[in-house]
Image (cartoon, rainbow, N blue to C red; front, side, top):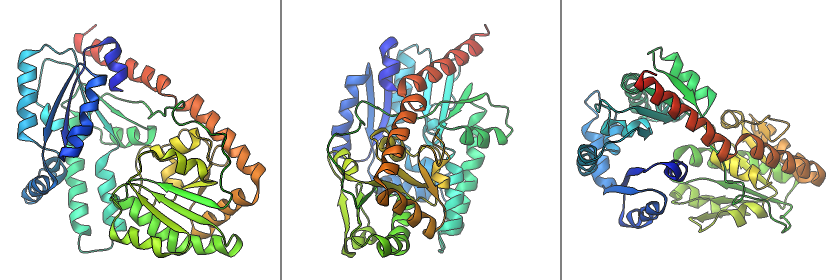
Length: 374
C-alpha cells in the first residue's frame, strides 16, 4: 500500500517500533516512501500505559500504541508540511490525528478490533474474561467515536464493513481487500511431502496458540488413525511455552521464526487454518492458496477470504470434519491438485494487489471530492 501510494505521491510514514531490532528492520520502509517518522517504545513501557488506562474509559489497546515522542513528531510534521490526505491504518493509532482538521482523513479499521476482544471474553475461560469483555466494550465505544471524526472509514472485508455500518454513526464507509503478491507467493516445481501439514502464524498470538493446541490434541490423533505417518510443522515467531511443548508430540515440529516461510509451505500437502477466533482476512490463507497449497480452514477464518468453500479451499467446524477434509486431500492426489489450481486461480482473480489498490484509489478519490465539495 505504501509503495503504491508513493508512486504518484509524496508519502510520509509514521510508525512505532518495540525494539532496537524492529527499529533496524523498519528502516527498510525508507525505500518505499518519501519520509519515515519512527519512535521506539518498549513492551514494558507500553504495558504500563495499558494498565494505567484500566480505570479510565480509554481502551488499554490505545495505551499500548501510544508514544509521546511519535505524537510530537507527527505534530511537527503537520505544522511544516501541507498534506493532501491523512490515511490511518488501525483504530488504535487514530488517536495521533483524530483532532486534526482541514485535511481529508481516512481511517482504515482493517478489522473491527473490539469484536476480537469480545470473542476473547467468550473463548478464554479464565479470571481475565471480564477484562477482555471490558476492553471490547471500550474499543467499540471508541470505534464509534472515532468513525465520526474521519471523513471516510474502510475495512478489509464486507463482513467487517457490515459491523461498522451496524454502529449507525453515519460514517461514510467502503472496503478494499487484502491482496497477495502472487509473484513472490507462487507455486514451486519441487514435489511436496505427501503426509505433511503446516500452520503459519505468529505464535505469541492467542488465537494461533489456542487453535494449534486444540488441533494437536484432538484432530491430529484422528488423522493418524488413517494416516499414521502424518507430520505437522508449526511455523511462526515467538512460540509460547505451551506451543514449544507440542514439539514433544511425535511428528510435530515447532520452528519459531524463520527467514522465509515459503519452503515450509511448499513442502506441505495441506495448510491448516483451524482458528476459532478470527476477524478480517487471514493472510496465511491467501499466501498458501497463491502458492498452490490447498487449505483446510475454520468456517470463521474463511469469512474474510473472497473464495468459495468447497470450490477453492475446504472448511470444517468439528474435529471429525477437520480430520475428514485433510484426509480427503492426503488420500487423493488428483483432488489435491484440483484444489491447488483452483485456489491459485482465485487469488489471481480476486486477491490481486493491483485490483485491491484500484479500490483504494477510488476510495481516496471519493474522500478528496467529498472534502472539496465537488
